[in-house]
View (cartoon, rainbow, N blue to C red):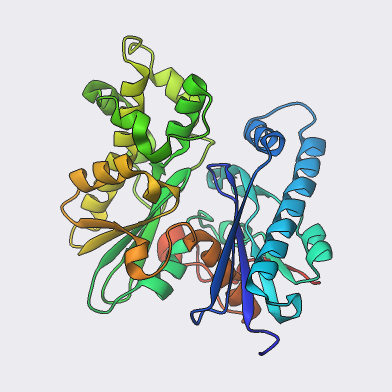
Length: 362
């Protein structure tokens, strides 16, 4: 077994549920792990999404905790797979986004990659987004290049939809060209709404949304947001789509039942994705969904009802929808180690291809 065979990808996304990890050799061998956020860490990461007192100190402490959870996920991957740390070339660690403002030329991911390297004794590649932004890009989404490498087909035009906290699409043309962008909210508003009303972290299988009815006038009002009208390249996050944004737009809809609002939020996610596909990928053959949204039966049905293409999860292409993003950051770590570009200017709008990430040696 070669000492540089394996890579680890670690992803904690906008949904703020926990850490997804995967160890892979990109030739079929793959083991995954998931560790949920402790409630105290989740609450602090959520609080750091907006300005507050003593932010620098609080961010540093949260970064320590996140690195320790990342290290625990790495340990679980090594234990489960039986692979030694000596056989892992690098860890790709995304960090936790707390600000994403490419218009102001910065993005901020909480992380402590130095501590992660110290704890795991493995090289860590982190801070993948900053170089693309420095080159004039959005810094996101970064997954379309990986989607092309794994899901691209010379005979089929496909759309890969990642529904995490935020949704993004990768448009994979049969000729090999790739475009992609964030389409708007994924689970973030649905999660916030059910937490506000039921204290739950998410709407399991979309059951609460399924119990309600879409309020068409509210849906139209929610869709009346400048971001949806912007042409790509574009990206977004909790800086725009958060509970405050939703509550502002619910003014005048006080008679709407909470479950009807939840159904309407699911429709908002599905409709904003479908509108983007109709405008920019109308000739695609099929749509494949990954991320947590792929497990929401109601949301998947909404998306199927809104599109003419067939809608399936990426499991149909041989990759679990829960593992795709972590795999993407393992792939980006490999690209860094091989000194190959990780971004696509056709997606992010950067001035050119760039090597993404920074190395923290073991």
